Amino acid sequence: MPTKTPLKEARGPVRFSTEIWIAAPLARVWQLATKGAWLDQYFTSATSGNLDAPGRVRLMWGDEGEDVEVLSVGWEKKVVFTWAAYRQKYATRVAFTFKAKPGMTLFTVTESGWKRDASGVDSSLQHAIGWTHFLAQLKAFAQFGVQLRG
Image 1 (tube, rainbow, N blue to C red):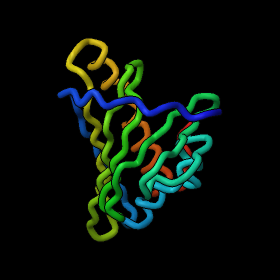
Image 2: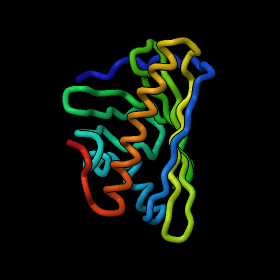
Image 3: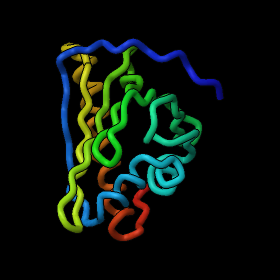
Image 4: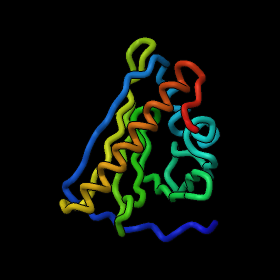
């Protein structure tokens, strides 16, 4: 399936953050959240690469896919990328941040850039739901080796 031309960021004011504590070392959570082979174990069905270096990566969920443009990486600290906003003709910006405590990792997803209109707010809520599922799937897989996807 060919990749699409990246959408321009709207840079709107609507944003959210969601986070979770995972009882696993930072290095493990980083690997699970950024390496395509690991993402395919609990979240995606196919990934064209890793999210730990700048460049384009295709994420697939069955027949549906999305291109991610990784903009910057701070190893085991932060990943920033853009991707298409749900049912919008613009992109949003996503940041994964990682903070370690002994035996624990705080993983936060922040997404921003929706326009402040009904369709932008609805799109942001759809993304928030998706990221909440992602975090639950990541935690279950990191801590217990359990896959929550159907």
